[in-house]
Amino acid sequence: MKLDFSLGDIDQLWIDGALPSMLRQMKNNDVKAQLSGKVDSPFPSALVPTGDLLCSERPSPLQHAVTLLLSYPHSITPSPAVQDDNGWWSIPGSTVYGQIRIPLSSEAIAQIHRVESDDHQYELTLEDVELVNKTPRKFIVRGSESDYDALELALTSAGVIYERSELMQFSVDPTHATIITIAVTTGIKALARVLTTYLRERKRRIVVVKTVDGSQLAADNYNVEEIERLLRAASEHSDGHIHIEENARPPRA
Image (cartoon, rainbow, N blue to C red; front, top):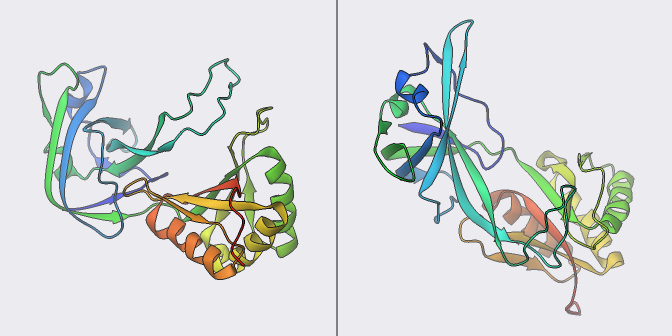
């Protein structure tokens, strides 16, 4: 069985016919999922055992879709604590979870069965699965508000295409927020040159968190080749999140 997955957005897999009645019966669609097989790219090893089934149906033509949503430990909440618009404070040191979305084929949906359990309503076991990574290839740059202004100018001057974050208001604290999205098609070499100059002028470094085990890769030196290697790691071994941080360690000569 071959299934697509994504660490970001992915289209639903529409199947002819109505949603199976079993998936209509429960208010919650918590599922205990077990997958085994092979994958074409790095895949998180520490998955939260209970996920969710995202079920949809459309009338014309009558079709249904079921997407398996799983979570995995991604990173740690940075310090200092910040307050959002609703008054909630972040907890530095707490685990941040990423999500994996797997649109299920009719064959996979047929393996779902109801169970009587306190923490889940369904179970799904898929063996000998071939998973294909369809994660949109892009870099998500995270930094402070002051980082944004300087980085935007550097990208614009170099002709790098990017999207401004939907976040319109930054915290008054110097915390991290998603500021810019850059398509990988921009060219990693060109982006590495821009970032190297930017990081040197701002005395910053970039850090990537690997999806597989949560380990961090950092570029502490203002070297184009080092930055390029880190960008490739972000593209191939993580969900593309790049963190801009103050460089506490002096770069090597």
